[in-house]
Image 1: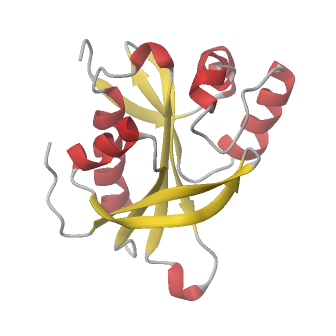
Image 2: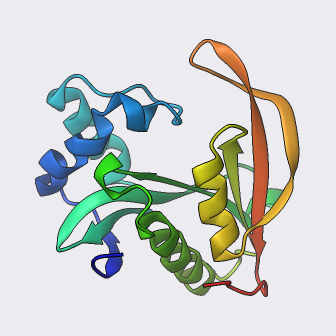
Length: 172
């Protein structure tokens, strides 16, 4: 990896950097959203979702956002102890350890900041081996294959469930 990785909250001034990955159809291929074609739509998404989220962070390399990591809460009193982690990275930074470092930092921060958090989970498409490897390198455990788990981009998708439980050991 060329430079240290850090996380910080997004600001609307990050729009142009966010656009780099959010408008890339190759990046969006493994995501639940389609590549953005309008900066106005992306700005609206940032204003309504990113900036208002309690846990949506920019992945920073060389002082600039190159991706994002977020935690999603679940509804219901019985699910306050878990969150789903998601991450996305500009293609330029794929294969350089940036996503792994960001997921490691986010996992440690979430376990520290969210006192009731006992479990972080991640769902990854069965064919997305690089994303699965990111989680495994951090120390997430593969729990199993969820067949035909969700509908995304016109087809049902098999998803692999990963988890990191409070007390698990980081591998990196």
